[in-house]
Length: 124
Image 1 (cartoon, rainbow, N blue to C red):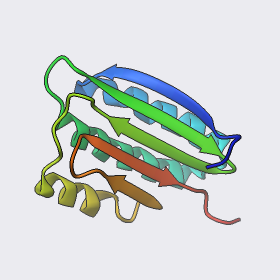
Image 2 (image 1 turned 45 degrees about the vertical axis):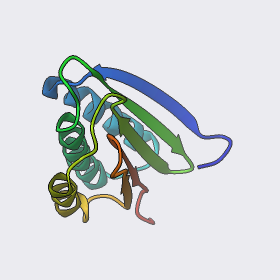
Image 3 (image 1 turned 60 degrees about the vertical axis):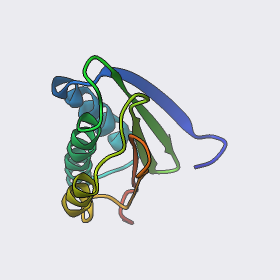
């Protein structure tokens, strides 16, 4: 990302029904970054898995922070729960298996409730 990177921040209750807001936001921003419909579907599936990963670590009545960063065709999403615990090795392995082919890059911090995913449009 560069100095011209734009950011959108969402603070959501740590409940499954709010995952849709993150998916819809990512789809809208993905279109602006030139992702194809197929790439947007992949991104939405990866976001579902990232939200599931965060919900598994978030205590009840807390918030998940979703930060979208976008610039020069790249879209990055960072999800975090300040009061969450670290994801288990099993949940990280599930996330890896489900998203490995869907997104370009991801990072899960094994010491806290944090995940970042990145998607870039395929060359035309």
